[in-house]
Image 1 (cartoon, helix red, strand yellow):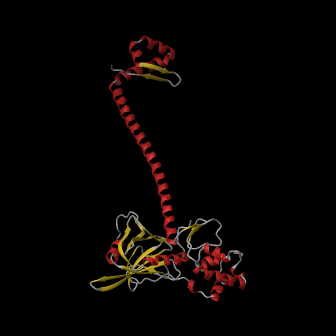
Image 2 (tube, helix red, strand yellow):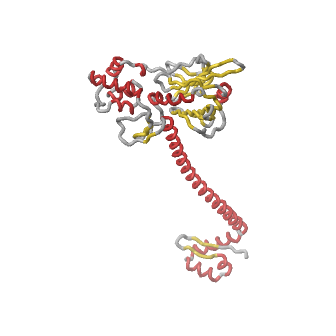
Image 3 (spheres, helix red, strand yellow):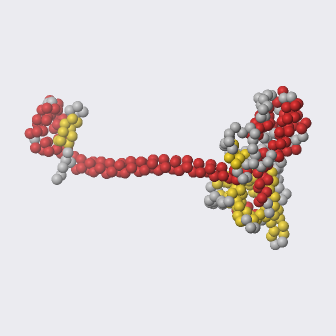
Length: 374
């Protein structure tokens, strides 16, 4: 399942997000531990709290609860200072861009003020807080492009595509497609018009999508334009098909669909599924780490025990150093001229050697000794 909402999907989602207009900001959450997530708690009389949750770079939806929040950021503290208690007056999409604009109204001692919060859902994503003239008061991250710059105290400029997709007339649509350098019609629709692959495939249903844009005949181009305009006026029928969350039914879907009451509900529910999957995977990793730690702790205990045991042995050997040294010198001298059999015979007849030497490993030329103070 794709992780980011498309421009077309945001177009449909905004219709549902408008249910939050004229609600009061209760609390804002944005933590240092989760900088890519912004949660705005909103209260509507008679309906209680709802939470608008943005997950950068590409998701935004309403849910009925908030996730656990930790240390607030400086941006969060500023948003709380200016926006808590404010009324969310308007939610809109910037043209056909993946940028959402929230306009707030506050009253302090009878004076009305307006503020704008822009949530960009493309590239790395961003959160930009502006005054009513779009001067940037604070933002999540300064960003720079050749045609626009995001930094404090500058004027916010919305991203702008080469074409105003929503307002394209038929002839302009045809000119764009025929003039596209893309190798196929489906890629031209997906990229030139910012539709994305799923919806470009829908337009090309029963059309040879591999054709070069410049080779498409006028009749086919006219059909594509009608289908293109229809994309913006489909009946809201949120569903999940072919692993994708969709705001309406696709005729090109290949598998059965799961239906939802709203597009927002579909996004929220499947987001929770992804979180649950991530949590299960995280718990598996934690279990593996715990097994490794337990194994290392066990090895550490063995090492500590062996260390103590070897330390005791070393101390014991040191305390009997003279005896051991004399015994080894004697055995080495005997070994120069006698076989292991002769040595064993000598040991069996010497009470001191017999008490100390427990065994002889002829193969490895080792003498096993044992001291016992009892």
